[in-house]
Amino acid sequence: MNYQIKASSLSNEDAVIHIKESNINFGTTRKTAEISPNPAELFLGSFAACMLKNVERFSSMMKFTYSKATLEVNASRLENPPKMDNIIYNLTIYSNDKKLNIGLLKKNIEKFGTIYNTIKLSCNISGTIKTIENV
Image 1: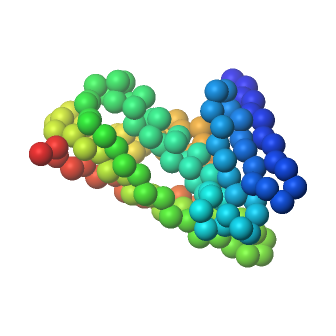
Image 2: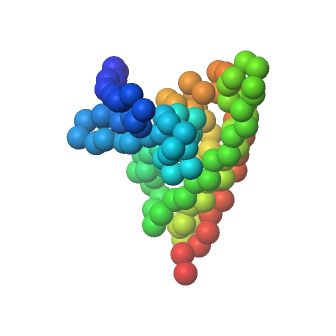
């Protein structure tokens, strides 16, 4: 598979990533540092998108149902060299389905996630998956 995106920016302005029919604004200037996502946060967003896409994908393959999934991702950055050093995630799946095998889901996400596998080559990743029954 091949992927393509486009991005653009103007001097002293923030930038935009153009993907298919979506535009994702992100911060490149100090004036929006507190309100717009920065490149590191977009990177973590790709990681999160990969995990959530795989929850959906594996719900069909593993034949479980869920009403929603939430994900919290935290990362630490090294200064020298500047790079992500450690990523910790907490994935919560809201489901009453007894067929949901958390251990197998975690194994599948870690084995088949494209972004997950790309990142784990250069960064430590650890995390948990838990379920909350729908009330």
